[in-house]
Image 1 (cartoon, rainbow, N blue to C red):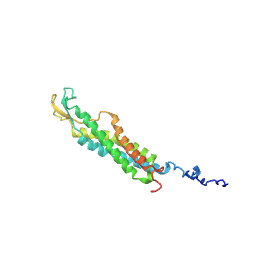
Image 2 (image 1 turned 30 degrees about the vertical axis):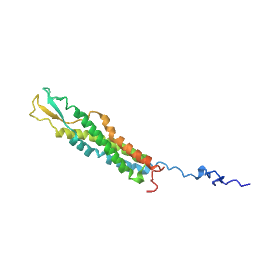
Image 3 (image 1 turned 180 degrees about the vertical axis):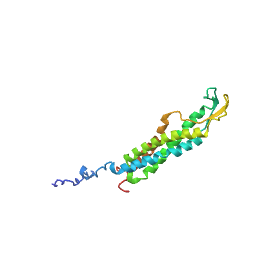
Image 4 (image 1 turned 45 degrees about the vertical axis):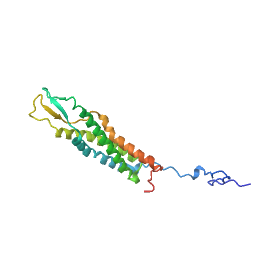
Length: 198
């Protein structure tokens, strides 16, 4: 008759059984680090937000202008075919924002010592601010690049500055960042995302 296994010991396995290890032998799940990552997260969000300046400038260069006819009241009436450029400007802004979000996610993932939900949340906040800055400054840059001529008369053909027709475009960059960071985390598969090996 065999003696019972002591506390913490593995139970002897039979001829066709795998050895059973109790839950006391498993490694504890690492907890989320918040306090140590808080200051780097604020710095990360601020740095990502500044990315909106070059994004807005690049969009203002690439987005096509819309041809319109100057009316007597000073407003512009868009030409029938030129109205398609409104979609082009929006699609270009979404593409730039999504691409920037994915690239920023790859850069954040390389910061191995700070991996985790705190850095992800900081990245999402910074990406949202970056999108708002890109939309605001991009419209200003585009308006400066396509001013209405002071000598324009009613009936003249005017190149109208491109515009982003919806505020939902702000979600492109945070979505790209979340998707990229989430794919990296799911591919990693470690409970601490590799922080302890840094």
